[in-house]
Image (cartoon, rainbow over all chains, first blue to last red; front, side):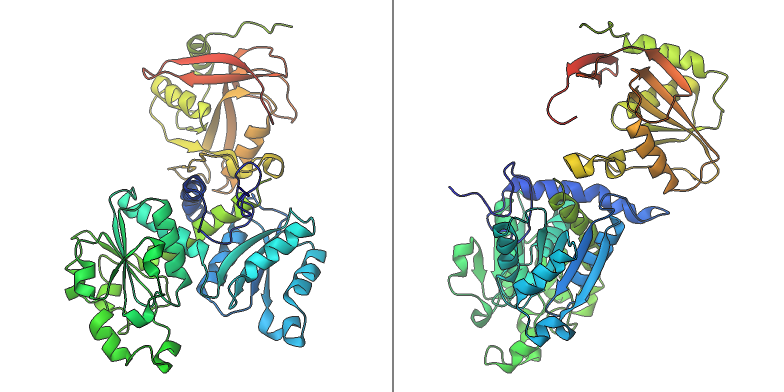
Amino acid sequence: MTRNPQLDRNGGLRHLITLEGLPAEVITRVLDTAEPFVSVAEREVKKVPLLRGKAVFNLFFENSTRTRTTFEIAAKRLSADVINLNIGASSTAKGETLLDTVDNLCAMNADIFVVRHSQSGAPHLIASHLDATGRSHVHVVNAGDGRHAHPTQGLLDLYTIRHYKRDFGGLVVAVVGDILHSRVARSLIHGLTTMRAAEVRVIAPRTLLPTRVEALGVRVASDMREGLRGCDIVVMLRLQSERMKGALLPSAGEFFKQYGLTQDKLALAKPDAIVMHPGPMNRGVEIDSAVADGARSVILPQVTFGIAVRMAVLSLIASP
Amino acid sequence: MKADPLPDAEAALAALVARMQGKVAPDAAFVGIYSGGAWVAERLVERLGARPLGFIDVAYYRDDYARSGLKPNTRRTSLPFEVDGATIVLVDDVLYTGRSVRAAVNELFDFGRPERVELAVLVDRGGRELPIEATYTGARVAVTRDNTVVLSRDPGGTLSLRVEPVTGVA
């Protein structure tokens, strides 16, 4: 068996590309490592010197505010130097290839690349290139690639679930909305099945489900009320407005009526069910404001935990 | 070469308490360095009177991250008192190279500016690599460099010391 290219000889994390195939022990190690990092934000000096002298390059080929900002904060709280590249306005626009950009940044002594790209596989390509050219001391973190994966979002979702529910064992998790285009959903589903959640349900119209989605180990419900019944966790996904332009959906109003999360529908889940959303939210499209701002919403804690989880990932991959 | 026999941990604790009595400021906060130092700090508070008690995990401040990476099972540092202006006694189980104490002092200062910082250790085994000395010491012992001194606590709370050969990366 070939070893997982994300892991080193001792099973430690060296790149984070996807949660698919990542062993449960590695996921648990990340979640455990994140826990004490949460409290760094409560200090007078919100910083620890772990990554002093390391250079983290944020390579965002696709727009993002939250993910880029939380990676930047995470790296800075670890005392790393952070360089944000505005790729749209840089060399790539002038015709430089992705790997030439990477080689140039390595010549500037990059230690970690945080990569967001609209093409699935771009972070993997960079990691393979670094490994093939003997630069095993340089690490790659996928910050979202195409429809493929968004592993740190998946990890922060797992962290949030474990924080509120202690254990994955008995949990029923519903993931609602645009599963087809969602790297967030894919990463979370892989994470939950690895951590052996009791059941993962996907709730979506057929047009927004990948073919053979059951192969991921999930149960499909096209009726939201039926799907929400007895859930411990409800994860709402963002409905990207560009999807409306195709023939996939009739209208935002129609989608909200069937798949929007309201207090009414949430009442079908368990009384202590929590509501999650990766952001950015479309209020009135996939989630009602009363739910988003309600007592069971943990959407803002997710953001806070996201910083600690990214600190954990950065400090583990940079560990020798 | 066989090292000195180790002192009994409970006897060393009693000696440490005797040396601190009447010397340590009554309002000084005790801060135990995880994990052994935390046990010693808890016991010192029992014996020397109620006072603020905190715990520090120096994993983020160690100087060997680049060599051996992040230690697993890091705990939250918790200092439930105002560090600014406080007299603080750092408490550790074994004082050796002085590197953990250096890390703990650095971490303390990220929480505020203490008025004074002292150091209490159960055992001083020598071998310093930094200019650091304890204010209060329970016992002194010579142990060769290929050995490590380990403090453990049984379910009843009794402390004991043992020597183990160093394995892998120190």
